[in-house]
Image (cartoon, rainbow, N blue to C red; front, side):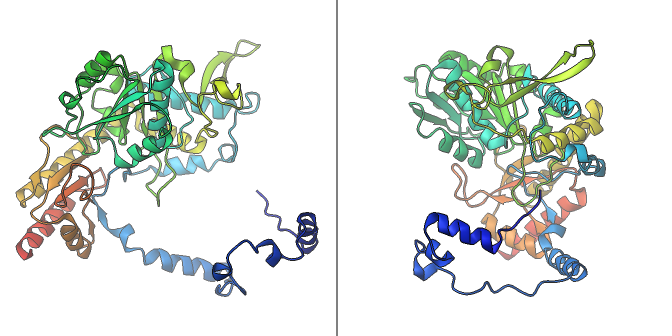
Length: 448
């Protein structure tokens, strides 16, 4: 995109149009106490070579990038094959706009079609779309879809949902519905469905995350039974889709809507984004899905072709009939995911998932041998919660001194204490990393 600054004449004509004599007059509504007077104190401009050297020095000062990391909690470090980025750089895929002109964009449409197909198979669902910003907003859209489909407004949510995702759900639905009921986690780390008030009647959705925020696989058959009792849609969310390469997918347990984060598949965990929302449902509810669907058909000559099949958003149908105002399909991130899944294949992805599980088990056992206690007994994937013999912040400070990011402290999060720590291990962690983490715990315990 070209950058064309305003000329002095442009500025004068615009000021005249709004009746201002100068830029200061235009900004007079800004309080004087906070208004910048004079020039910005910026350093002198650098030539390209010196600028690159400056940036490399800044990058070298980022100690965290070189640390061994056990940080998860919704964003995950995985090895991304260099072929993913190299293929993304192809010019025909680099576009700021959503490429849906079928006569021009068969390659992009096919990539989206393949993305939808792989996500539907991974999640065990019948239909997947390609239009979600991230896992948090996808989860909120799933709740809205359940409300539309059932014409009900009460929602039952597990407290095992990632707190950040729950915050987005609460924000987007705050002026909708009759309220939300939150179910606590049981002693094994899975949602305690027996804690639900027996007086609750019908509901729009039962929402549960699996693996949940504590890394534990939920009891989805129990969630399905509760949803059936309430006449509700079963919504299953997730933050680590790699788990479904070795675990039964939500669709196998009768989930109606599955939504979550796809960052693990080819998108780096990079300063808060970008992320990639994944969304799937049953065919019966396809017209209630937000976003867009790409479909396969044949052209006038009978050749295989791809088209935008369904798009229930306000740009295509009447505003009051639209299911969502989502206006992007995250095409490049979806393509990265497609390439990533294709490179691993249906045989390679389970191998990678088992490697994640093995490294997580190694890290947990090492920490337990060093004095930590496993908080939940239920099966986990590549994350788990341990209770330390000291506040987690004390332990993490000791970890940083050894070049390790030890995990996510859970103090202040509902249901967790200041000694609770969420630890994540992926294929990028080694047994030696786990031993180093455990050694820090032993030293910190002795010193505490």
